[in-house]
Image 1 (cartoon, rainbow, N blue to C red):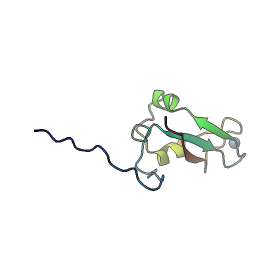
Image 2: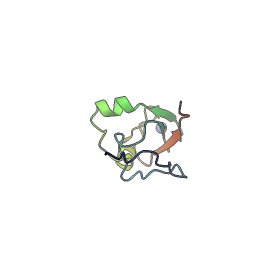
Image 3: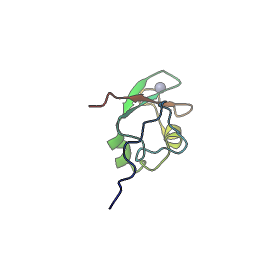
Image 4: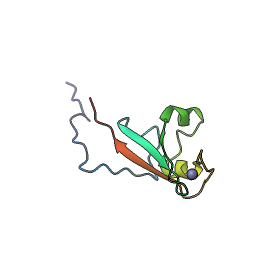
Length: 89
Ligand SMILES: [Zn+2]
């Protein structure tokens, strides 16, 4: 007799993720990632596939945020990442 384990776990009550440890690989698919430039407030959706192609998929989100460069003004410092839950099917 095999017992299945690890199913039916309740999702956490809150949606916070640990950006110091979560990477694009471990972040659940239903999160959408946005980046915002601190200098000019430009906001852009981050395409996970683009980041993965650049080899940054194993960086923590905190590390990723430090590498962001604004496409409008070129600012690299203090840029923010934030996450939004996408409604799941
Ligand atoms: Zn900018």
